[in-house]
Image 1 (tube, each protein chain N blue to C red):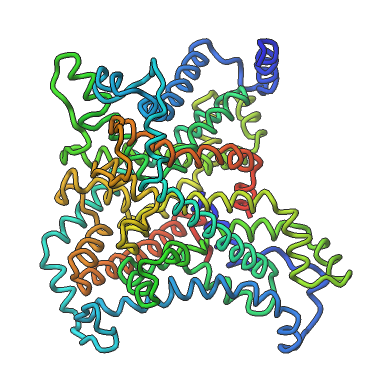
Image 2: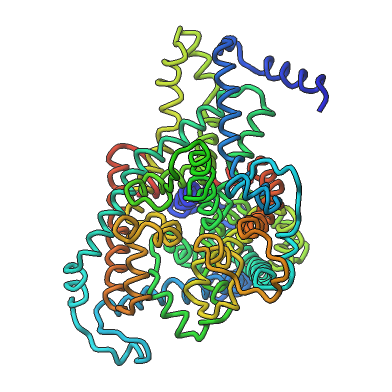
Length: 305
Length: 329
């Protein structure tokens, strides 16, 4: 960004300020600037340490006593080690698979139900909606849910990571709120043209709701990607573990990973941090999209109802 | 955000949604005609309802084992009913009271230390005049919300742990190492600061929306009447966001017994159960890990019922205070 455009932004900001608010004092502006920088530093500093340490060489990590803020010499050894086809590679694949499948199922059931419940006055709409909303008040508890999953024969099965959390009432409510704000005339017109509900949903409503579907899809994807307790509870077999659980065992509990290729072992610290980076990466990668839709007010719009 | 959604929807659900369009209103349709008309809509809802039934409502019935001497490998129907014996065992177990006490302490600490932070942050963001800076700061502080607890704890360990940044700096300067992560005395403060780091930024969304909804002309006329910054804050800003503050307080109180399950699960080994155990982890370790299913389920059921009563009471209190609450009457 050139100095000119920055200057222009500041000028616009100055003009946007209402007259009654008065001019900001030098102290006020200074304090704000420092606070903004400080807040960003608090959030971003851990990212810096983790990324730097994952890229550092053994000598550097030893010299610095376990962590590195600015690596002078970059090494991708840790990443090579991880992607060598060992535990982490497999866990990464498991996480990706569960996230993709889970998000697809969640989105489909959520969008369908949100549309089905968006027409007030339709048959059974109220009782069905109540069934969905009451889940805000009642949670079944860990043990009964575990027994249910066991009863269904889903222990040690990846479906146990997906089905119990496939429908999230909050997400459903967000999508439904968005659908209800679409002008009724559009759907009336579709019906007059002979389109059934399915066609109306997939050809008219869904394309208009791309933003909210994207956001809710990302919410689901993030929650599948981040989940570790469900895997801990339902998967006894450690070879089935998703990435977050491997992360917990290897990074937080410092239990060594069984690796098939141990030719030159890079410093454990850098491998640990490299796994953290890999677990964070997808989140940071989708974040700008999420952020763009959030700033468009998809959520606050649904929220105001 | 999720809290927001629940509010709006309970609102619409109780009122019956927006006004019906004039086309639908005058028709009086018979049940079978309605069924034919709305068949597709009902079919669309079914998958979600089936999933909720299977993983919320039917498991709710499974709480019956709180009144049973349940052991795995014997079907629930054949387990003997034992009345309130599990609850007696539970109340006689000091570990349960310890978990309850830790839970309430954490809830209280989060109400005092965490709850005001998003409000203060939102007011600060709202006071930033340059849109670009404001958006940038928002993007940055929302980010930690999307990280998993495993990663957040790993981050904290990397900075505050025994071999973390702060400890190493101390050692290199001739001091002794410092491991904040495994110190039971500061564990509750540590947990609260982790929650603040992860969710305070995300928590601002709802307050920023509320601040944006305040009528600009109120500020203008207040300023014309000579109200200074403080007066405008007290008489315009605060009343504008008070319903939201009350709503969130209620929701938090309703969840008083639910704190940081995954967070504790990840760090319990380091600090030990005396300082770290909360109700949810008690249920997990006592019920699932140690195999005392009946007592674990009793603790879970008790937590659920008390939680439900708390939500209803808190909402009642909000109505009495003249606020809208979570759902309308």
